[in-house]
Image 1 (cartoon, rainbow, N blue to C red):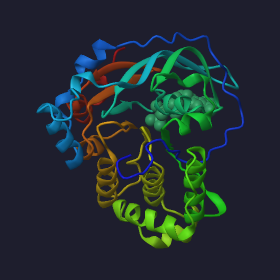
Image 2: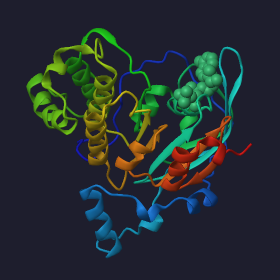
Image 3: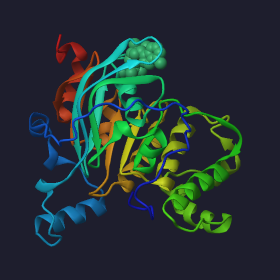
Amino acid sequence: MASSPSPTLKSSPTPYPLKFPALPLNFNLFTNSATRSLCLRSTRRLSPITAALSAAETTGTTGTDSGKKKPLLEVKDLTAVIAESKQEILKGVNIVVYEGEIHAIMGKNGSGKSTFSKVLVGHPDYEVTGGSVVFKGENLLDMEPEERSLAGLFMSFQTPVEIPGVNNIDFLNMAYNARRRKLGLPELGPIEFYAYLFPKLELVNMKSDFLNRNVNEGFSGGERKRNEILQLAVLGADMAILDEIDSGLDIDALKDVAKAVNGLLTPKNSVLMITHYLRLLEFIAPTCIHIMENGRIVKTGDISLAKTLEKEGYKAISAS
Ligand SMILES: Nc1ncnc2c1ncn2[C@@H]1O[C@H](COP(=O)(O)OP(=O)(O)OP(=O)(O)O)[C@@H](O)[C@H]1O
């Protein structure tokens, strides 16, 4: 993202062993105009850099019209089952995320939000049974999980995993260098890497002690979340999927994480975040909020949807 030298980096070398099934997909791009019109794209709160670039856009100095943004992620009629039991969880998800946008997915427990994000990154627990996913113009479903992350997809999991015996800085250095190798760039040695890493630590307001601890081992819930954002800051992404990044965070940590995410935003990258609470959305202003119910997005709107939810609960907006 903004502070990363490379815009398309991987969250963690998650070596999912299973091959994702290739599907007969329609490669045509599509526009979900109904969803677009329900989002308040003009009211997104922007980071200072983004705001400056957007201001330049409106005065025409960059030559890019924000109305002509490219779609980054296009999901059409996506259905998926649990690989083992074949139970259908996603029952036709439709969503389009354009460059520079922040989308939030909310929904009752068990509605399919995490499953959707895990299907996007190619988690082997799920099998896609229909629909299409186009990421940066390419068929995402045809890519291996590692290729997806190399293509610029980052996912911060709801429960970040521990990696015993591997310390944080070595892990980050290894993952970052793996990415540089893929890009044909020289690897960074420990000293150079530390110089690159240090400002990212400041960005997430994380103490350097955490670098020498094993990845997530003994980390509190909040520290794990902060560490996930550190990985995002180090590795970068075109699209960051943040699954309940706010859970377990105290108010100061929430502000730090939100500030870090906002600081990583550029007009070119996007965030898809899953949350239950309005409070995160007050710090990271979303372009659109989608409500997921029973494996489908049943409503799309602006921040007022989250405010209604907070006040009245899901009965106020339920489709059923
Ligand atoms: N690997 C799995 N094995 C068995 N059931 C699963 C699996 N993955 C998802 N499910 C089931 O699918 C449904 C959707 O789960 P998912 O985690 O996507 O919901 P969610 O909307 O993210 O919920 P929450 O808000 O509680 O995190 C749930 O009923 C869950 O138990």
